[in-house]
Image (cartoon, rainbow, N blue to C red):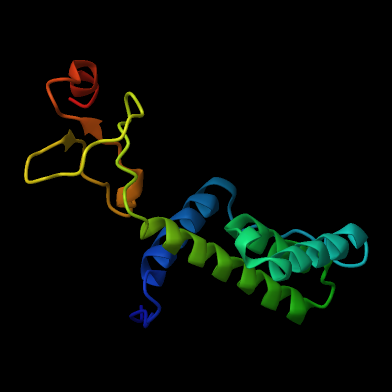
Length: 159
C-alpha cells in the first residue's frame, strides 16, 4: 500500500471517512454494477442544474452548501458522456468534502444539549461538561451540558 499524499487541509479526514463508508457498503452489498440512469432521459435535471447555477450566481448571500451540492448533482444527472459524467461526480464528491470540512471546523455552538440555553463562556471556571469527541467526530457535534449548580437537571443529563 502506498502512502496517501493529500495536501488539502481536512481532506485526509474526509478520505478516511469515505473509505470507511465504502468498506461498509462493500460488506453489505458487495461490488455493484448498475446502469447510470443519467443523460437525456433526465431532461428536468438540466433545468434544475441551470436553476441552481442561476441561484448560486445571482446572490452569493443566498448560496448554501445545499444549493451548491444540488447544482453539481443535477449537472451529473443530466450528463450522458461518460467522461463528463465522471468529472461531474468528482465535483459532487469535492463539494461534499468541502461541506464536511466546513462542518469539522465550525466552533462549538455552546448550547446545552439538555435545555438548549447558551452555556456561558469559560472564564477560567468550568461552565460545561460533556464527552470527548470520538475519533473523526467534529467538536461542534459533541453534546455539552451546563455544569453550574443553578442547572441541576442539566448536570444530571450530562453525567
